[in-house]
Image 1: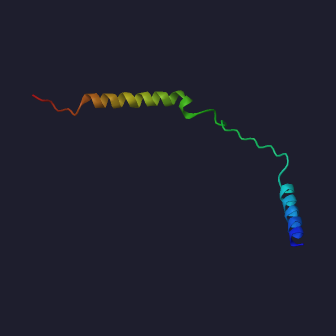
Image 2: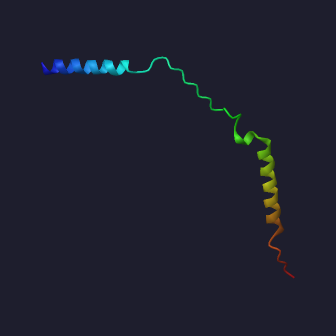
Length: 68
């Protein structure tokens, strides 16, 4: 008798859980809402190139010591 009651309660609980789920809910997730990735902007490439050139010039100039 305990098995029958337990089975009935389990079935009832399972039905309640299944009916508690949401129906047709549409979720709109727009990932590209701000126009694209940061590296697609031209100003990023200009700033990056300027920093690269400045570092290249600073490294090739040396420390300023001369060996006479």
